[in-house]
Image 1 (cartoon, rainbow, N blue to C red):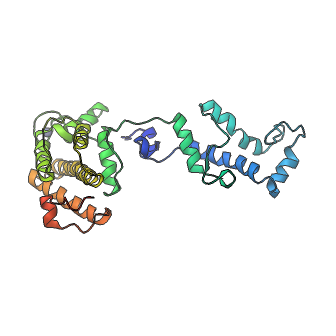
Image 2 (spheres, protein in one colour):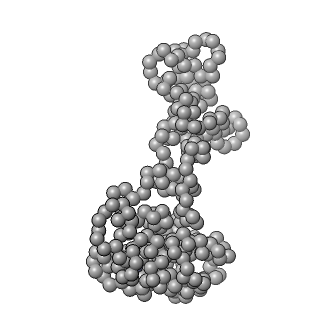
Image 3 (cartoon, helix red, strand yellow):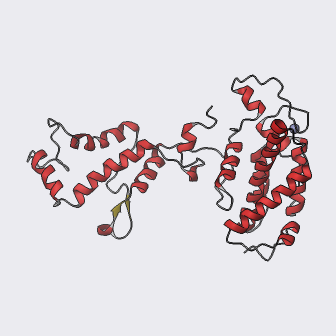
Length: 296
Ligand SMILES: [Zn+2]
């Protein structure tokens, strides 16, 4: 089953997507590059050949093309039309990058991002940002959770899968929806309480969704590094809650708030030591979150 819509996977990371990119815009960019090459290097042999074959000597065309001839050249030049049809307005300097006018070169990536600016669709993921201080699969999980795209019992039923009982296994009370697992389950609240106390930030317990949790975090003033570390901990917390939930359901491992909290501290410690520029964290100090001098 597909849990995340394809357009969300294609959308750029800065727009809240997974950033896989669109195959269509890659094709356009590569076609456009041929046009750019033709205009920039008109004396190259292949360009001279094209001119010899396609030029009708009327001089009106910017790039010669004889539509009566078979072959790929007219398909390449049809990119303009194709873009227009899709609603993309092209300009002379589209995809151009770097330096003074005469030193600019064509960038496929730049072209694609300009296409996306025009026809892309932003995805609402609230305060979520891709955080490179944790393994990708953890951020990816947090991203899915914030989009409501994890296979919680409620989400399964919503998608027409009959699984019988939808009660949350952690608290035994209430439907296990994504928001329930992310924030509102009483056991999850207990975990968040421990985490907030550890991180020395106030806990109101009023969050009812993953978005709320991140939103609360960003209400606090603090340095960029401090916030990024807190995000690491938040994402790790969701990951560990999900893991413990699965172990309970599929392997009947009893759920323990304290054990989950310990695992969150351990995971985040290892990841920050290996992936963040902070590095060399001291375990004892980490456990007390006594790191004021570490953050710049
Ligand atoms: Zn629950």
